[in-house]
Image (cartoon, rainbow, N blue to C red; front, side, top):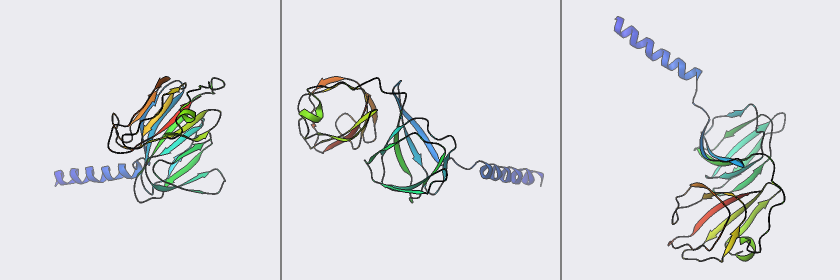
Length: 211
């Protein structure tokens, strides 16, 4: 009987601890951390509010890695309903405390690029800017004084023009492609090169240039 009582006590205690400490609504996986930016993937459980009690002190770029819907409520503002698809990109200014909730029926992942500090100054300009010399493959998603976000697409076996990158950039690969896996995140630096997709499938990625 004593053994049975001890076992029951352990089970009840474990259940009580789980009730007091429910699983976190979001898991964070760090990917890149430099003096300019920190990039991490936030995975949000379905139907579980995720409060950010201190908010975010920095501006961010959000890249959605899954289809889904979530809500966001900041202070006394009305609840925002946010629908998104894999590969969507949005700008999120610094904010105060808020509560986010994934109202989808599945987990969702968001690559968040937190921008540290202010831009170093006016962004340099190159005559070999990929958006100018290779507009077929490089398109500007949006741009402001802190970032320029590029959407990059190559068809199978497609070859681009020689171009130059002046800025550091956080790159996320949206599908498996030669030399990279889907959802892989890298930091790339300045350089001049010509690219070719030698694979049999299209290659897509998002590049967040850091000014």
